[in-house]
Length: 439
Image 1 (tube, rainbow, N blue to C red):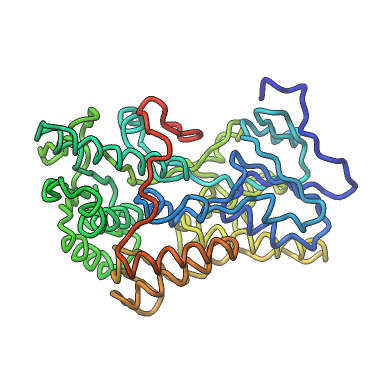
Image 2 (cartoon, rainbow, N blue to C red):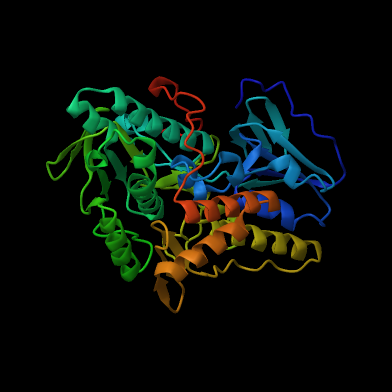
């Protein structure tokens, strides 16, 4: 448990049952919203004081959006909720027997615990990749990549060495899922339409984009049609796509692939997968492949007052024997079902088993280029891109953020410009931002 075991988080005592929610992601904020009118004291804990809309992180990293437009202050989101308390604290341990959690600033008792602290970048135990590549899970990490990318072009202008220029302008993206495909597409647009205006003294033919995936095709979680179309779009941007290929080694200067290729590059974006953010104290048998095993009500085995929601939870069903996909709609629906069951519990009604309603999946590869898989049909191109924008815009927290993002997108569309090409803080490799992203 925490070294601060004598300290307690100051939360007012109440006769109501206390629900402690770990994580202000999609599941956490949806649960707080859904429990608003129920007689519980709710305590939300997160290491940041804001909710991050992760599907648009890549646009922050590639200078398309301001970071605060994809974030919502947690205190502001719930300022009208009664008996709600937010504490900015990182949870370090869970004591299931004594119904207590530890944080770096003290301990807290709970009546019900909801673990919804999501996932972290999966480096598959590779320390070199952890230290030398750029993950895409948090806003400060996206800003690190933005600064690094722009610093590279500033250095390219001043470098007399063609080999060094090559390293500075080459980008390798590892992982062919939605994040990898969207990063590659965004960099392709920057190369074609934006950066040549900023850096007229650079011949942008030297900027090479490489996308590497260990699987047989892109967008493995979507239809083959979507994967094929994404490949076609990326090739249109000149992206070198390699499937059935892994990164064998990376020393910070050269990327070695399993097919023998060596790519000189100072920028490697790691989008090769995620794993659960497991907290110390969970008993053996509860965690499987980096996720918490739950029943059809999102409860932990033998701990009916402890729930896990979203990316961190794995619920095995006949339809999904390996658990549901680690995406926002699953997290939101987990939270909605749990809130419904807590309402039923108050009326002495039996809980309802979780049933995932798959509303489809989508990915964008740049302006007018997107793929959408719906349960019964697929579409692509301009209409898919408009649908992608609308769905993401309506999912953003806060009216102001929607307005800012929409105005940015309209401006980008009309002018091919990206307004946030700013190096606000110089990126230094040994001072990168990675809290919680451990191997």
